[in-house]
Amino acid sequence: MKFYDEVMNVVEQHIAPLASKVGTQKHVRAMRDGFITAMPFIIVGSFILILAFPPFSEDTPNAFARAWLDFASNNFDQIMMPFNMSMGIMTIFVSLGVAYSLARAYNLDGITSACLSLMSFLLVASPARDGGLPTAHMGGTGIFTAVLCAFFSVELYRFLKKHNVTLRMPEQVPPAIARSFEMLIPVLVVFLTLYPLSLFVQAQFDMLIPDAVMQMFKPLVSASNSLPAIIGALMLSQLLWFAGIHGAAIVVGLLSPIFLTNIGANIEAFVVGEPIPNIFTQPFWDFYIFIGGSGATLALAILMAFSRSAHLRSLGRMSAVPGFFQINEPIIFGAPLVLNPTLFVPFVFAPIFNAVIAYTAVHMGFVGMGVATTPWTTPAIIGASWGSGWTLAPVLLVIALIIVDLFIYLPFFKIFEKQLLEQEGETAAAQEKAPEGEGVTA
Image 1 (cartoon, rainbow, N blue to C red):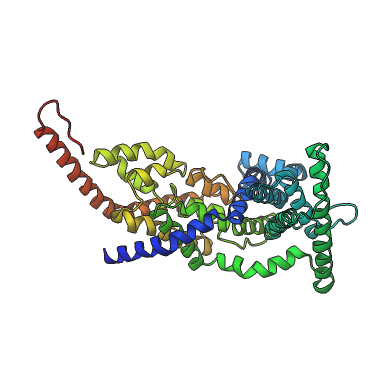
Image 2: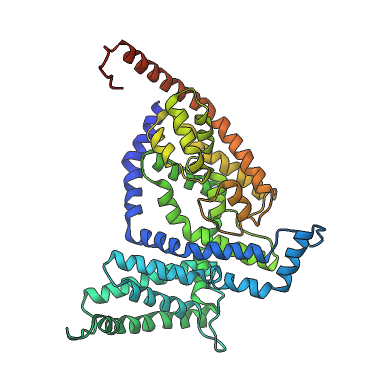
């Protein structure tokens, strides 16, 4: 208990206040909202990618597989068009979403700010060539640049407006037209700052700004694929959850650029038939580590469903279906898991065991890496297979991880169950002794 008390003291006094500030910080929230905005396009694009690359061997004798392979081969360009217009240009949606959210946090006009952000990003990441706009950096390699351009353009707009550096129109002018003239100076300042910078980077380093930004963030992206980094992110997420703060929302908000960058690089390698480079992607986080939600609580819901405790049994059966779809707030707050010292160890360390096992399996090549982003509410067995291109190995891995989680939770669950059974027994005994017609407060 001394170790538990010391951990909770550190979490409550140092980690939780800092995490709360980070989670409510305008730029972090804008980044999170921007990626949520882009998520429907990314998911649809991921689905199209699997349609274009059937999960079958070229020499398969299966009639269905053969028909799918032939269809994909004969109509490859047509099938890939929706992918190119969704996930292939996901940085456009990110740029718009991040800028819009940040602008609204500052009470600025969201639409004009989003347009200014998009122009800033295209100016440095997609200079026109041969009558067209290159899309090389509209995928994963442009994520960090899109976020930085959104921050820069909105902060610039806010600075100029705060210091009244703007064109003011008479009150009789319609608001829409007045906003258009208000944006003239911010647009001009963006051109005078970002465009010369882009030309300088091209002339001095023979690369575009997104290439330079990726070089700067390369150590961070590389480190994210290491097991210690994954475990560190997990520890932070779980400790915050245990203290009653939505740790996953905070941590995933910070990890989202890395997730999209990694999955973008994986897709580029997958399309050209090269080795897939990145282990740490959204499917890995959602479907291998957090099976049933934060804390990998699907196993706990299964144990509860067969508990001798009436409270745990009803809660487990009620939570099993939401847990199957990665939603576990009923268990987290109903058991509860928050500030529950009995279940502290499995709640924090079951996801870490999952991460170690899954990382080893993927690193050794037993399971494929993620090449598709799926909705986080997809059942883990389906989402893991979908995320790696509809292969069977992820399904077997998820089942094995659930079994591991059952064994991790079981001894602590038995202790917790015994505590509740004693409480229920005391309540029942008190009710029997109470005079007829009087209630007993539990």
